[in-house]
Image 1: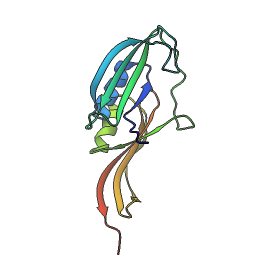
Image 2: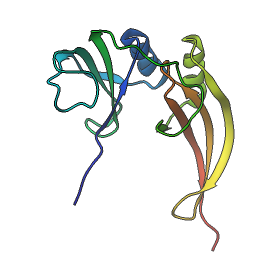
Image 3: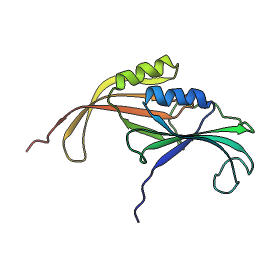
Image 4: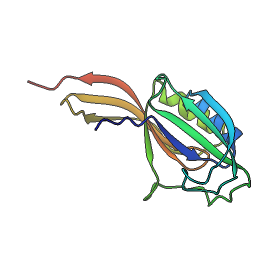
Length: 159
């Protein structure tokens, strides 16, 4: 069986605030932006007749790695407190970035929580080569956790 994960959809409290974050911090573009009414069958949230707004954002690839943002419009869904740590049930998004320092700068301008400032780190890749990064980690306005890694150089494995 061959499957491709094309999109992850996240519930958001404030669509405009979230859109600004994803566009300015991650450089994503709007692919789709429409309100629609839930049927009550496919989504394990809300009920039939609820009106939501779905915005799908994309990076460079036209289908893979998209992020959907979903906000309840009518009725407004009460949201729990914004998470401040990664725990069970919460994903960690890993992003290949071309400028992790600028991403943090943009996040700070938007008043969102930065967990770690840009820093150098290295790891051995699956191919045995050493990969050196400038990484940072931050939370979006709804507490979704993002690790951004800017590849600086690759050292071929010895031998």
